[in-house]
Image 1 (cartoon, rainbow, N blue to C red):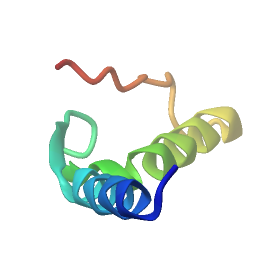
Image 2 (tube, helix red, strand yellow):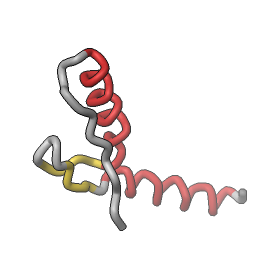
Image 3 (cartoon, rainbow, N blue to C red):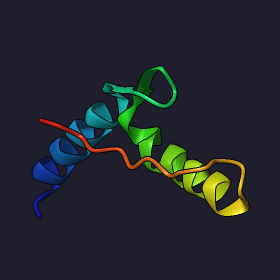
Image 4 (cartoon, rainbow, N blue to C red):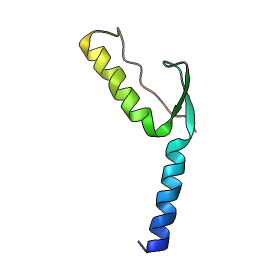
Amino acid sequence: MKEGARKDFLVAYQRRKQEEVWHPIVGGKVPLGLLCHLQARLLARHLRGDLEAYAPFILRG
């Protein structure tokens, strides 16, 4: 990938990570960049027995 294209890609990627989506479990907006971390924490709580069920997050376009 050429330097200019790489830079454009990284800028677009960083912008996308800052976009927020509604998360029903949290009850508020969450940045896309933190979504995987949040879901991992919810799964860990379920595996420890703190949550009865794990609710996956499905991003709808």
